[in-house]
Structure formats: C-alpha cells, structure tokens
Image 1 (tube, rainbow, N blue to C red):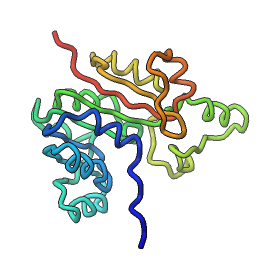
Image 2: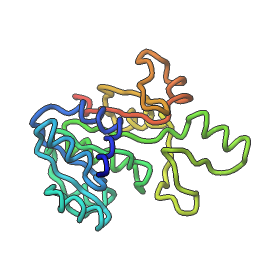
Image 3: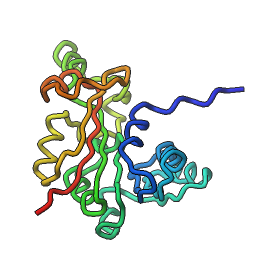
Image 4: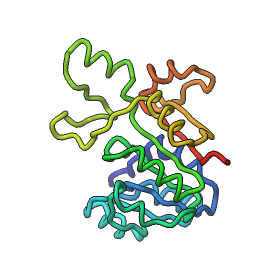
Length: 207
C-alpha cells in the first residue's frame, strides 16, 4: 500500500495564515491540494480557479468547487470584496501580468496570500555566473525552453511590487531548501540571498 505523500511545507504555512471559516479563492489551484487542506483544517468556503483542464478535472473528482480560468483575464469577472482571502501559490511567475493579477487579488479579497520561488537565491546567481546558463533548482525544475515561468522575481522585487500596488505587508517569511523559516528579523538582503522561496500575506492599505 502506497503511503500518502506529505503535504508541502509551504502549503501548511499558507493554511496557517487563513482564518477558520473564511471565504477563500485559490488561483492556479492545480490538483486542489491546498483547497482540500483548507477545507479539512480550516473549514473554509473554498473555491478555485485553474487554467488546465486536467487540474480542473482532478479537483472536481475530489469534490472541490473549481472552475477553469486564466488569472490574467478572468479575475476581472469576480466581484470586489467577494472573498476574505485570494491565494496565488507558486503561480505568480507564470502569469503574463503579475502586477495586474496582484491588483485584482487585492480588489477581490480583503487579503491576498502569495508564494513564489526566489530568483535572487545565491544558488541561482551562482549557476548564471559560473555556468552561464539558465538555472534549474528544486523549485524551478523546468528547462528554459519548456518552463511555464515567464516572469521570474526575487524577494526584493516582490516587496517593491507590493509597494507599487499600495499593499500593506501583514506577514512575510522566507524558507530555506528544507522548508525551514529564516529568522524574522533578518534583513531583506539576507532573505533575498538565502531564501529559496517566500510567502507574503498582504492587504490593501486603508485610505
């Protein structure tokens, strides 16, 4: 009998940011692992959007409420303040217009949760500098010619984007290769150099 695969640590950390019973939209929900985790552990009203038909089929087969949609286009159809949280997990770099997507998330949800691989990590810098080739890591595991990722960013890039769209950073964390959180009081440059991925909880700045 095959053992059930362990839940990714970043998904567990995302779930910890969500209040019990909240209305949640997971954008780019894949096979629904995070939606199922939120429903089981947080009792949320969980909805999802996924661009691939296979992903939608996998989610529906699990009894999850998921529609097929493109974050770059279809978020515009959702009502303002329709959700408590809008989540974009490991998908930001695959969107065509990350700024617009983040703005739409903050319009639709009272809060937004975003996780992404950090392109400023030292191992990525080393691969480019030493090998002169596009990097591949555990978080960026596609060759350059077949990757779905089109807008790589670093942690510092994302902080600047949050400021640009006038979002307040409620909580942030950087994870190392093992998924352990880096020190909260570490400076941004240290997170940017040593964090393999990052998670941010954002909300709109009050006027």
